[in-house]
Length: 182
Length: 273
Image (cartoon, rainbow over all chains, first blue to last red; front, side, top):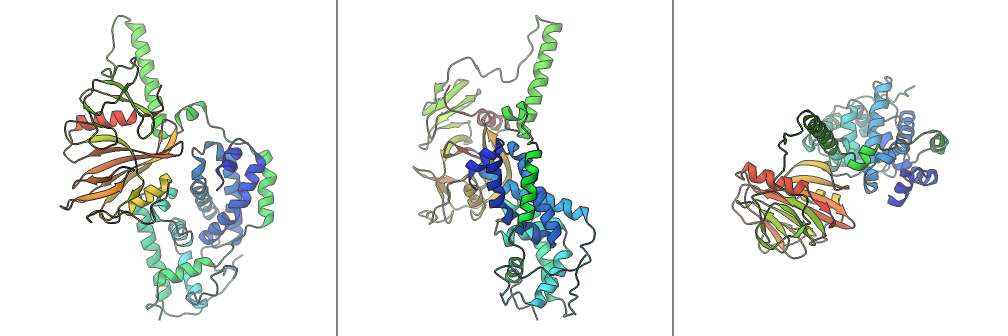
């Protein structure tokens, strides 16, 4: 991230912030989408995060840490969205195939159904660790730092989350209930 | 059966699927709202103190002390209240830190690795056993000022081999690399502000085993540690230099000596007055 843009935005430069928002918006939205597993919720969380970034930017001490700080705000927004809504837990909506990995044979349709179900059973705390570590390739110590939790807690959350997802993958074959949440 | 497959790979592939672009309407909604949204400005106290909770606490404590001293002065102006840290004369100009020898309490400065100033209480001495300047206690505990350019691959290997490619230049690069130093326990990680510069403090403890342990390289040497030694590192970016304040101690370091070295570490400010 361009720290000059961050510094300018910290001092109220709206154009600089617009550039930051364009640059960071896609990445933030992608992470929110994977944590919340819902397009509308992810859009709301990203919007709230971008506004929080603008509002709170003057309090950011080190512009070089903008990315980590922004992800921390995003995860907080995801918590808030998850608390605000109640309907997504029991429902299932498959995400559209628009990522580069959708042709990977290792994640078959059946796997994806089961992973979707297993992931939705996880708390947002656990989902955040999985997404930051396995989607953003962030080392666990940085994940812990970003979420403001001890490294051991991050390890524990990742372990339990992956154990749950592994169990979902290993579950006996069952009909995939591909419903649509509304 | 999926039990024979790699679940991590499957989860990673599954996470790749999903939205990757923020719709323009969401971005537009944000940018429309920005002109009507006030930024939260830092208070004067936050700007002075860098907003760090420890510093905020320190200011509050200092305020209470000043208030109490003022009240006691007004109530009994002829009574001199005891003042903490009175063994460090603050009115004297900083002296250059000598290479070795006892230090009289006061303010000292060094130009290596960058110009910095610090206050030394009673009971410490200068101990430039390595090229970097250092302040020592009576035991082998010491506070040194250094830079770390790379880490060793295997702390027990002789001769030491450095990582190739070397670690990156940022504070985070070093923090992450330290977490991967084989056999060492990294703990007590927290954000710190040192004289207005953001950084990270962590402690890294050597294992209790007998091999000669090397850890990292500074421009002039490779650092070695002894079994069960802990290095409290404050890693700060100062004008393009990744400075490391290192307080090295052992389980049996006397508490008074540890406190004196910690007091010195806490007093570090950059530049020379």
